[in-house]
Length: 290
Image 1: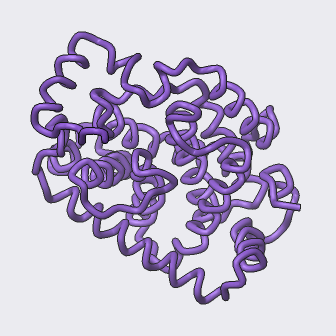
Image 2: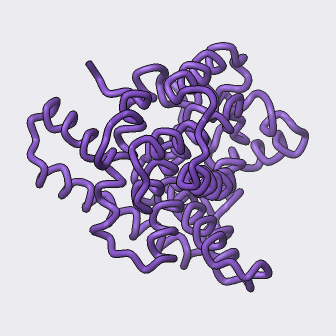
């Protein structure tokens, strides 16, 4: 039987080891091959963060492009380097996506910044080496796989909860494992992160993955770290993790079409949203059909 979050929570050892074992049995790959792939993806994440923090080039539609660099270079009034780092890393990745740069879809392009923002941000804050991140990334992939068995991970299917919610759950589990959390803590970190994204709509202005997507990744990377902190303290989701996933899938089916990546509702349907969409389409016209 495929691994579930509830089952994962009852296991001992490292959560990522159980996910890895299932993956090896399904794919026939070796442990070394899987970890090599994760190292390659980690390298791409590092590169996208570096480029995003140093560039203020505009995005394709011109609505974003300098947010990560602006935050990274600004004085920190909170004197909290972790918070600023996590936010800036996440936005850097998504602005690279908006510039059509190379990123890792984790699990989608629109939610690509949450996992590297949270995981790499925490690791760099603590001075942890990159090799410590490979198994947490395996766990993150496993969490996405479990969610994807219940609903397609796409804003067009379940709203942004299916994208940023999934990425926050992945990141929360990964950070929890990085910091020594048990499989139970990892599963509940994922559930805590996911349940607090339920009902989140997908309302990209003009249909571009820019507004509110870039800043949303910055917010939800912090959200994932908060979920990990709670789980590591012993806080558990009252609703079992697998039931949280089922609730998200049910809500996704209930969301109207206008709130599922169509650009027809929410922020996209505000007067300013419609104006920005018109301006963006002049800069980056959509390809014609046929």
